Length: 185
Image 1 (cartoon, one colour):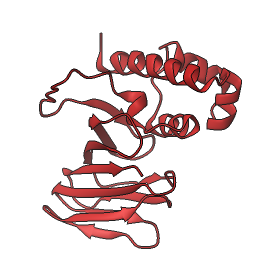
Image 2 (cartoon, helix red, strand yellow):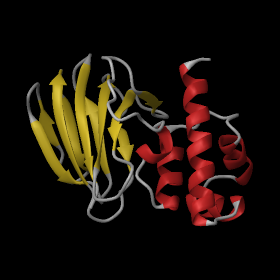
Image 3 (cartoon, helix red, strand yellow):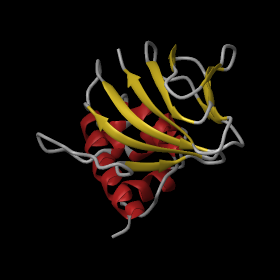
Image 4 (cartoon, one colour):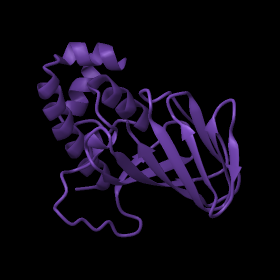
């Protein structure tokens, strides 16, 4: 089984569980997430490999952190080797994230490893109220933050910003990388 197939199965299982918990029909969730009902059905059956943007929309509609959709249930001690983690590609931007850890509940956080190349910025819609992001650049240079106040960061630089407004990430040098912590209220 490939990494994409693994992600599709994990997403399918988590989506089904959360949709049942919220008692939303496929049609209701599709409308709330702005995703086609047939697309949502394919995702829930494990026959689709959705983009990061689609998964964010679904997670928001379900009222769960992004990691709740893409993370398998972890054992008590979990080791994520370098280069591993649940990989999710961005549509339209040279931006790759790997979810390294998620608590799976509100009032907690998620940790991501980011790899990106110069080119189109990865634009993110506003997250739910109170969500903050902490991004630590580990290689290269990046421009990150809200559209009206982006910050340029180099290796070792950290930016923290309110992520409940539209924001973006853009590599300024080849081989740029960062660690992102999503902090949910």
